[in-house]
Length: 345
Image 1 (cartoon, rainbow, N blue to C red):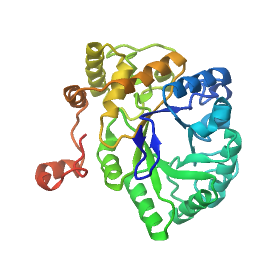
Image 2: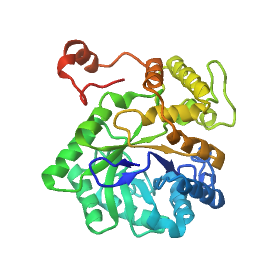
Image 3: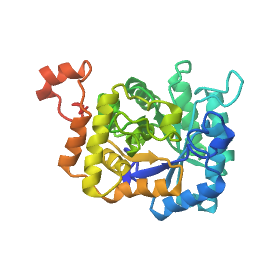
């Protein structure tokens, strides 16, 4: 269990992502997963047996079906779990059925509460940045939801570092509820967050939840250099994994992880997850699964720990030239760039 940012809330190092729930009802989400209630309930059971109490979803996943199935799968065990969901994406055809206006924030929260079958959301997150709504309006609406008891903590997802820092400044100035966490895309093969967002999380005491820690299946061991991979896999159906600009370097990472996995007698996916759990700033990894067997293997990643040498070996395989201004800071100002300011990527 790890503390969520500067709050007193403790969350598991591995959380469950319910993006695969209900995909059969949505053409867009069907390739990701089509888990229905019976199997969803088995997965929730498996999570709770392993001590995983944080479940993450979003109102747009399978047009709301993910929230509905997750709520029903949890059922009477609601007091024993932490529910996280998100708002921002389009939920209807109307001009105000998207974004982070007060109108949409309030309506989206009420709709999520109904679908989840609960009276409160433990972590309510902005799914993206709304450049057309003043942050004061968005944060005031979220603050009201906290004061009303409908939401307990607020967070964000997929925001740039300046978006997050501006929101923290507005919250402090206006005395509004502050983000407790941010949810980011991060993996051993996709390390963009290490330049700005990880230092921000460390400096501002924000929890960092990681989505797609296996880069859409790239780091499961199913894909090897020069091979197409299984035709039915999520990555084959969705195309290239997100954020992978250099496929050659990505497969260097796969090979490094495969070596560690073979030495440890674990799966490549476990090695990839375990590596992330050792990274600075990481609070919890959000893992999804198509089957209970996949889920059980992913959860086992929290039962062992890579050595410093193994962590460094995988990191070296994915190293790349730093962008500006990071390369300039490292080259000319390293003595004044102590942690958390010195990024590691």
